Amino acid sequence: MTLSRTQAPRVLTMGVARVVRRLVATLVAAAVVALLGSSSASALTSINYCGILVNPNSACPFYITGSFTTNTASYSGSGNVGVCERVDSPPANLSRRCDNRIVGSSTDLNGWYGYYMEAKVGNDSNYRHTIDGQALRP
Amino acid sequence: MKTRRIVLSLAVLLVLTVGGGTAVALSSGNTKVATEVEIKLSAPADGFSEQFRQALSATNAPASPIKAVDGLATVRGANPEEARVARYDGASAVYLLPAADGWLCISSTSGLEAGCYDAGTTVTAASVMCAPNLPPDTVEVFGIAEDGIDRVAIARADGSTVDAPVTGNVYIYRASREAPRPLTVAWEGKGSAGEISANVPEDFRDGTCITAADAGELRRVDPDEPVQVVSP
Image (cartoon, chains in turn blue, red):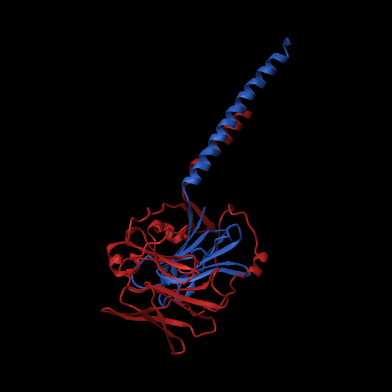
């Protein structure tokens, strides 16, 4: 097959485009592999919320929505301070627990990942304290 | 022009890839109140801290490794390979696990009894108001107790007191939600006596726990969707 003068540059352009496309595909594949690799290496992502002074026997005014595998409430100071965690998926409550200084939703959310959740934390003591919320997801 | 666009797209993709593990601020209006970070898990503990080993006779009974522990215990570096059976009622086993930095975690096959405590703990008290294996309209108070404490006394809002036996360093108290609110857990043991809050909130009866019938009403979401912060 012979190329006419008008066809030759076009084919040459297509060749360059093909090379660029292959290069792009390779780089995209490498990026995706890197992305997947980084997410599998890091087992869990933590979403930290609240972290403010919470009134006695009250829920933190800030909460988060999404889907999670664990919700934890904690108080990082010393002494006995009751803290609570709660995960709602309206109209129901999936998990509700309280403990001293740190409490997590344990295995309560097993099987519910992928459903809408409202993760909340609270202060179950008689004084104002800073309560940290931490939700985990893969 | 096209090549420049491709290069630009690649650059964005690579930035996203590299930035995947860095902190992201989640905002609600103009207020930043949450951050998303990749967490580092504590390395699993290689055994119970000396303090807990001396305090708990349950650590003398090795168990089959637990298949999975909850998120909090995982983050605290609880080691399922080092788990010890604290009690077994024929249906559910309760385990004690050593965790990083001398902490101790409790875990169970039912998923009900779970938590992590730092060294120096004599008696703990936690409450469960909603969990998959908690019977309907029930509240549970459970905890760990050192050797020499064979029962705890749970004082309730109506002035009554209920005893809960300690088996394998663990006690479990369950009552109807209609029963008086548990207020404190008191103990007397080998050279120690004390009282702590039962950690049951005043509004413990509020809320409807999930049931199998409710499952169909729950809304599915894409778990990869960004987390939203709800502010007052």
